Length: 242
Image 1 (cartoon, rainbow, N blue to C red):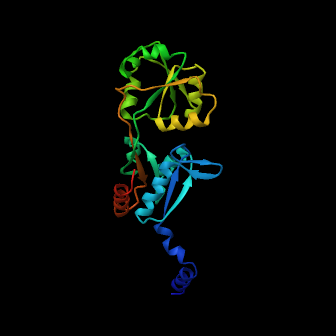
Image 2: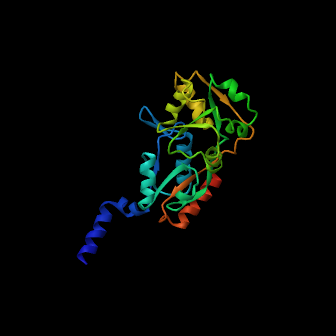
Image 3: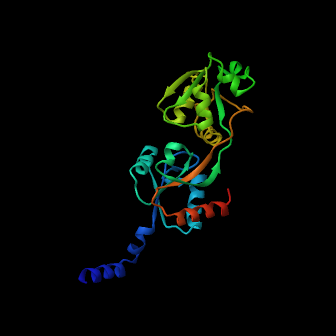
C-alpha cells in the first residue's frame, strides 16, 4: 500500500512520467538534403515531413540523430518503442522491424559521370548497354543498397567495379578526379551537393530512360509498436502532403 501511495504521489508531482511509456524515439541519420544538421540546426524535407506525420498521428516523440549502423543495430536488438524513417524496404530489414505505407518516392537514380569518360558512356543508348561494357568502371559505395532491381543489375554487370567504404560525397570526388568512370546517385543528393561542394566540376549528369523506377522510402518501427499506432501513422501519411 505504501509503495502504491508513493507511486501515485510521484505521478502527481511529475505528471509527465505517466506519459513516458507512450512516447516513441524516432531516430534519423545525417543525410542531406533529406535530414541533416547545418550549423547545429536540424533540417531536411523528409525530417519535416516525418515530424508532421507523427504530430498528425497524435504520437508523442523524441527525435534523435544517430548513425545508420546504430539505428539498425537498435532494431536488431529489439529496442522498444523505436522508429526511424527514410529507409528502403528490404527483406533483411523486414525481419527486425515493421514498415509503414510508403511516405516518399524517389525519382529514378542518375549516373554521375567523369567528364573524361563521358564520350564513352554516352556511346551507349541505354543503361542496360552501359552495364555490358567491360571497359567502364562503376564506383560503388560499400554497405549501400541501390534497391533490389539495381542491385541485381549491378551484380550481373560486366563493368569493372570499384568498391569504396566512403560517403557518397567522397565517391563523387573520385568521379570528378577521374578515378572511376561513373557512379549512381539520388537526384536530391546530387542537387544538394553540387551547390555545397566546390570540387565537383569534373562530373556530368546523365539520365537513362531504362533506369529502374525510383524507390519508395518508409517509416520503420520496432515490432512492439502497437498496430493501432501503426494505423495512425499510415492514416497520417495519407493525410499529409508529399
